[in-house]
Length: 111
Image 1 (cartoon, rainbow, N blue to C red):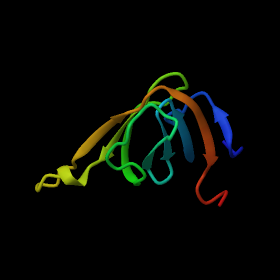
Image 2 (cartoon, rainbow, N blue to C red):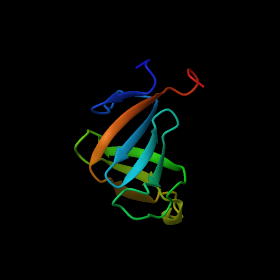
Image 3 (cartoon, rainbow, N blue to C red):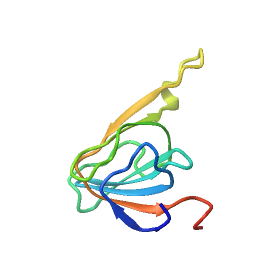
């Protein structure tokens, strides 16, 4: 995708770049180049605040791909749960219903 700020209906496993996802209750910045995720509470949303709101987290996996009209789910690294033997601690987050998905471009080609 070369057209920054383009709204799409879904994100696929082949997609790269940065995405702004607006749900019923919050907004999310999904960076598939850096493999990071940030959730922000919306003042007009229905969801409350969550731990790590506004904080960049390492994205390990998108377990349910984002599609407008549905929810999506991500697996995030949770260092507080890392095990001494080197196993990563994880937290799974599931969104409320997606209203819009906006492509923001690829890192390094549009900044």
